[in-house]
Length: 456
Image (cartoon, rainbow, N blue to C red; front, side, top):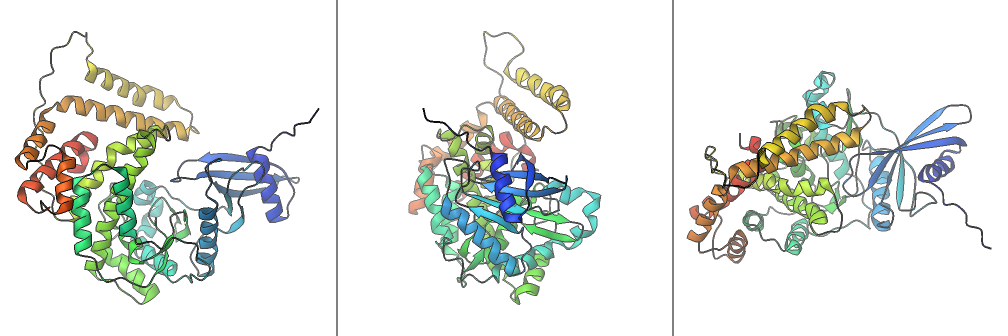
């Protein structure tokens, strides 16, 4: 009879890889899943040798069964090339296409000290001194990234980013007037191109480790590619990456500070118009990628509360896109909600039920969770947000949707998709006052339900 050898656990697999990388024999290892990562799993690793001394590391791996070997190899190459160019990045300890227990393409790095949570960096007193120069530091480090030699990075994607994001949008088969307006503006106003260099692709708060002295580590290189360097600068200025703060660069500083640091590293200072184009591009890109992420849940590929919730946040980027294009109109005041239709059901009514459940989750269940229940607290916040969205939609009634449909009918468009198609073909123009009224009304109706604070 054949003997089946038990497969290695993730902790055992990481221990073996770490031991081979460091030349240390470890008595045991623990792995703890961390939140974050757009498409990869991230784990904190703690290994103990036979004397009791601890070694820490960070594991990034593809989800088993959905590995992308070439992309992981490219990320490893980026980290090594960037480190050689002086970019503050974690050290690659080991990497591979797979290993027993890890069972997917992986990357093992040293642990870099620092904080990555945006709101802590923006508000905590311990970061008060470093906040004064972080925007300039961002520009300087991006300059180092863009000066990185690319001779070893031939596997990186070098497609035109505007063509790529338009293809992603078209493949979703969900025409949106705001995207059509943005695409037309980007095509008509594109600045001269630059020589291709290493572009990080997601340089922002959340992907940076920062301490009281400055930037200690640039993380998450999975979206790195070869392209125009100003793409990174524009992405950092997208409103979504301010995380609710007012300052235009990550909620921490000014564009002039960002460009000062970039000029110090590269000798080059992009114009305001060039940077603005890439801010518009980044805003549209995040709009499309948000809808793309939501589609993973909505299309049935991955059942996920988090991805489902992202679907209701697409309107935030629609609003931001209209804003950066100068097409945003003042939102009208809250209209009185419609009286509810007669119902056979007893009280509490549906809005009251949603409010009661929200109060219970935030007031009783949340505080009762243990301190280390980070993932559960994160999911709880998403649940509460979705319940609040549902309540606001019920209270709004049909009035806002009816107003949008009236404005669309005035344009001889039965739907927003029809309006988007006419914008794509040029039959209607984005700056037509009637188009602006319809698009603004639709985005404002969605945003008033999903995130009314964004309307001020």
